[in-house]
Amino acid sequence: MSEHSPFDDDSEVAVTSESLRDDLLDAYPKKTRRKREKQVVVNHKQADESGLVSLPVIGANTRTIPGVITQRGCSYAGCKGVILGPTRDIVNITHGPIGCGFYSWLTRRNQTLAPTDEHDNFMPYCFSTDMQDENIIFGGEKKLAKAIEEAYELFKPKAIAVFSTCPVGLIGDDVHQVAAEMKEKLGINVFGFSCEGYKGVSQSAGHHIANNQIFKHVVGEDDTKRGKWSINLLGEYNIGGDAFLIEDLLQRCGIDLVATFSGNSTYDQFANSHMAQLNCVMCHRSINYVADMMEKKYGPPWIKVNFIGAKATAKSLRKIAEYFDDQELTEKVEAVISEEYPAVFEAQKTYKPRCEGKRAMLFVGGSRAHHYQELFAELGMKTIAAGYEFAHRDDYEGRDVLPDIKVDADSRNIEELHVDADPDHYRGDDRAKAIERERAGYKFKEYDGLMADMPERALVIDDINHHESEELIRRMKPDIFCAGIKEKYAVQKMGVPCKQLHSYDYGGPYAGFQGAINFYKEIDRMVNAKVWSMIQPPWSDQADQNAPSSSSIRREG
Image (tube, rainbow, N blue to C red; front, side, top):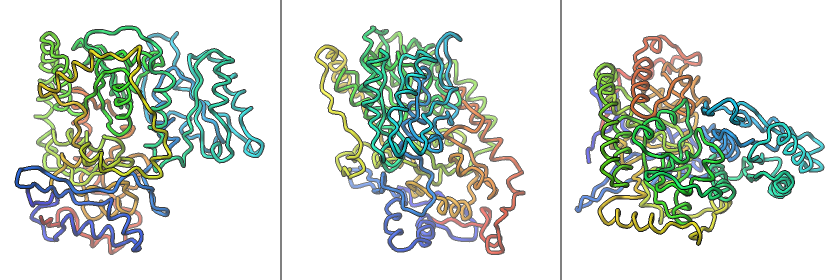
């Protein structure tokens, strides 16, 4: 392994990954430091005599320390905002005071495309029971039942989902009982989510709760058979239109996309998803357990894919074609890749010389910090520090560490579904094919995690907070910082461009080949704009002005 730090250059002031880590942690009281030092690690990979590489152990999926300003969202945000938000034709009702219901609005630029104006699309609407003081004191179940009935009378949807906010859990409203009663009364599918904000350490708990309920209440309802190359795409949320580009590529290859969980999705697609022959997982964190459950109950195996970056997109399409092992499909996939790549090469020729050597920091959720490293690498840019908001250890260190991850109280707080093979719907031929392909060397469920692809001795930070973000930017002056809306303007006031990778600001799509070209243009515009060097942070003082600039830092290995 290289001993050089990603902070290396020939400047005057020595900064190593280790010294920078110590500086970040020195600001904390002892107790806080003991907790944070497990979550801030230097990516020092070590190889043994056989060449087997081991990664550092990182602390992840632990509760945020009170008093620090985290990037994280809550369980309700993960359930309603992330997983169910992009679904087009399910009415989503937030049960709680309106002040808790921010994610009743769709806030992430998830897009959808209904075939005609006659098809249901409830995404522009916001539904809440708007609980008042008397509902908190005397209970809100009657109000919830009335809200469900009112929504049904107005929109006649196929399904209604109910989301619990913190006050609902605290007063004990039984949303599941109300949902069951209304399901019987209205004759449509009505189901609830115990996704109170406090339910887990982050929005990750909400993802799990949402996916469990979709699996229990919707998947498996429609047994319509699908095409010979049928797949589901799991963990793609159609931010800025990403799913539209991926759907177009799959269609041109002749691949039958049964369902996306949950970008541009519909109730009927979820209901029929168990008939797909292969599950392709984009965001490992938010949904790998659905792929596991579907394999156990219905038979289709799963693979990890990535459609962020031209190289990654080509690799993923080829991996899907390799699974089906069909010459016709392989030729179609290669034809599409050949059609797309000339424009990608042309764009790289234009933008790479302008961006090469610049440095990025990425602190975003799910697998995005991992996936976007590949796009930056296509521009010749280096990721010098990265981390997740709500990851578990396997998202950083790969699935080999799964047996080592201890189940804690927070994890036990989330329902784990027990799944057996469905006697009527389990497809043994899918399983037999997977075993055959595996024997031939094809790898299923393979995921090496973020750290394996990060530069040697880059900084890896789980659940980064405001202090650490500011200190990293002040000390290292990256050329771009990727985060969410909460961090965006604080970062930009420090003279560093901030790219939102949760909602893409107003840009995108960035998936697939055309999306990669869009990203190249956007990043070139951001990192080469002269305006950033003219910004003086309003809070800066003499000490800050004397801090080393990026051009005067000597970064040692």
